[in-house]
Image (tube, rainbow, N blue to C red):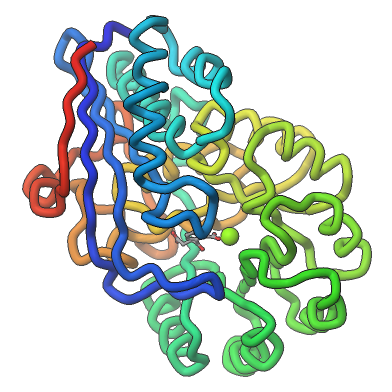
Length: 368
Ligand code: OSB
Ligand code: MG
């Protein structure tokens, strides 16, 4: 891969509606886009999914930029690679900063797939031509949640995820179940509980949830294993799994029955695929998590979710779930509950240059 340049854009777009969790509200999404161009003028794109503040993981847009410009790109400049999985190995000499690593690594995968004239999904070993689509309801109002669920079901989404916390769990889910007794629902707590809340969590077994996502601490594996022994609802881990090793240990330990795979959280597509392959072998279902992302990361998620082990609808929703206008063309659409896996080379979407310019805060070019 003869890399000629890397362009880094910081972008910012308001969400159509605030995204609320017990950890705060996301109203405006800041993000990073990386464009890697080779000596033939072919470009691959990646997206940095860290937020402006470290509420979900320790990374931020600024720490990502620092890692990318001061460490990751210099590593790539010194160590030319032939395949994106070498980047993953190269980056492992630096601790964590997974979203920064993934931003660059995913751009290399897109470039690699394009130079091989293959869709990224095929390069990764994907087998699906369409992905079952799920969506997240993130509000602190039961009325709004019911309205949103109604609309999302009309839009064709196959599965609904709701955000819960000790102030919004049993009666909130009862109301939803009253109107939608058969709906596939999962609940994401984003670490809102501790083991002291075990009776509250146990009570949620009444709702026949597909799973409960990350009920306990963001870095815990041990207490989730204790909790799983006490509840019927399968536990899915999100925040706690930042690597293949975490996934292996959590499964061996019985800390979860399902894993939410996020490319950014685990440091890139190679690590995400390793987690998938391990879980597939062990019969542990995985699904692709969302990060309120722009189109580039959404496209990488679609490619990843085409792998056979992604057997549960993930948080892969349409571009218009969050955005008035996305930065890719065509936008991601959900039709009859499915998103089509593109068959064009690489991520299979083009950049909406006009939109990108409109929302760009800064641009930096690094020549290799
Ligand atoms: O916990 O899964 C999460 C969004 C941002 C940060 C963390 C999470 C989420 C979501 C997914 O719930 C939302 C989406 O992009 O569809
Ligand atoms: Mg989650």
